[in-house]
Length: 277
Image (cartoon, rainbow, N blue to C red; front, side):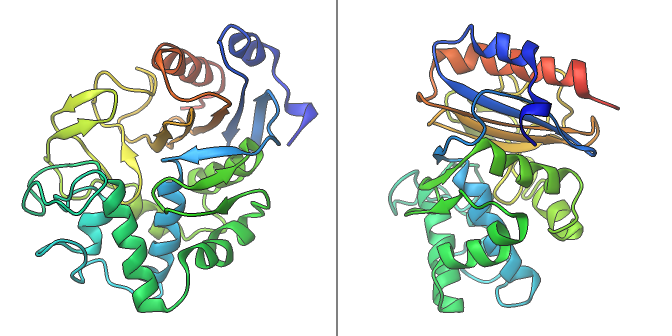
């Protein structure tokens, strides 16, 4: 990963945007294209959520936690919290719906999932993330410095390592990735932030599932099985296993119209040039 993967067409596209950004494209062969400074460390905002969920799910996998144990609002479980189906408000403890009836995107829900992890395990989620995810994947520039919903920092180089192992698991458990990338509580309607109401608004555990949502931040050519996340810091990751390609992106400016306009174009270019479906 590095200069050999530098891709001028991707760089030319990024140069038309009013931000400084970096991107990496990954296939089963590894990192096949990059543009921008992939070593620059930037805030992840909500792209922190999949990382936190991976650490929590490692504890589920080893039996330390149960997805079906009560957590969060009355009647909710850890699975509800990780899939934004608990009914809790975006950033406080107000309950807006019964668990399992609406998809309400919630930072607070992910924070409660992190609190449940710490209560049961007795260790900070940031430490567990390092031990179970970051260190095994060699993500040396990535850290969680606060809320598991939004306080991560990373580089595109590190995120490329992550999406490669989500695309073709070798360090992460393949069955665990499948579970997280599958729709939980199917059929729930809800709002994708900045993209409006979606019917249904499918989510996995820590990952958004593209499904047939429109409008959307990925490309029209991305498969319905595409899973990932975007962040208000101008960040995203997506993994499209049917098309055998994944992408990681960070920018130095917050999400705005430039991303709404540009991200689908970038993602479609990636699919057109690097998909092997």
